[in-house]
Image 1 (cartoon, rainbow, N blue to C red):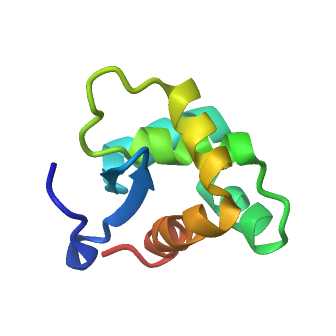
Image 2 (cartoon, helix red, strand yellow):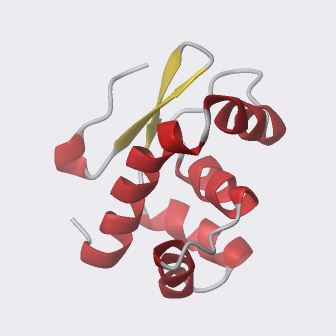
Length: 103
């Protein structure tokens, strides 16, 4: 799997020793919005500290560029929780910045 390319707005997320690439493509963001509601509201919840762990994992899931074989959404959520919110925050900030600014 390739490393995240910040020029493309990608973020890296380390899960179980593997570096996952999160790419906030139009298709990924539309899918996330379909599940989570308007993206601007998602950003507002994050800014006010009201973003739920399930919402963060859903955003990550939809933005995964290449899902490793066998990775489930539940396993992704467990890995994010095990690593702690501090480890996931840089990737979340990158995705939220891309939602607000675009490329």
